[in-house]
Image (tube, rainbow, N blue to C red; front, side):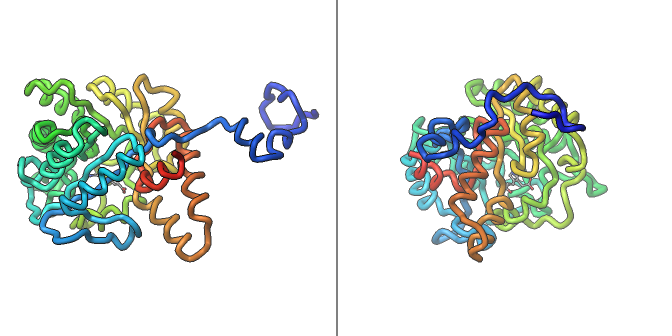
Length: 335
Ligand code: PBG
């Protein structure tokens, strides 16, 4: 083959007949290199306080805020479908400046965790979002200083208390998603100090201040005005910062690191996967879900193929686990 000027010289591929392995479904199935398994998929779920029945989230068609009863039913269905785990978010009835509902053992997130632990035991991996934004009346991921900025170290105190409450409620893995410096270290220490060293940390390591979290704000009734740019990463930053976030989190005790969002950050995901000493997850976030559902709703995209292709892409980029709102139906299709 002649060289194309400007392209790097690659080792010769042993055939020029590239279509040979594409000819039949059986050949394509045999030669596939990326497979998504049900156990790779983690279902994020929302449980809300004070609901009489599940409430649909309009920007995420098919996703609801659950009651404790509907949460239990949906969780059982997910486990039956073979998903690898559940990530629980709580939506309290009352929010306040410090997010008091977050570490209250009777708060909705901890009550939801306790209920799922009671119903499911160790049949699945139970994860909890460890962040204050669902619980604060200003909607930030931490507590505020007098000047209105998010106070890193005062927030860490709240995260310590949340970690202990979530562990006591039955979480197996805590998803540190607040992007405070030092959060993994304080959570790890807090868990060890109450003899819960078996509880792990799923650290949101690179997490970008993303517009693709938009529908999630509706999902948790967020009151945030403004943005999270003083603590989440700027999308215009490169891979070095992402790798620094990973190495800090690993040094502080992360058991798994996560990249978030997924599809707009597959470059970051691939490089994190290549470098990380611990396993790597990716979060296909609310906006990624909403885009496909909206386009499919208009008949503009083949929904099922787009879902599968997006999950395969995230796996191919290097994620070993994927948080996705499609976890149950994808798992059912894969089984
Ligand atoms: C923080 C948190 C968020 C998401 C997961 N954990 C919101 C944010 O950081 O603004 C977003 C998930 C999604 O968009 O699906 N508690």
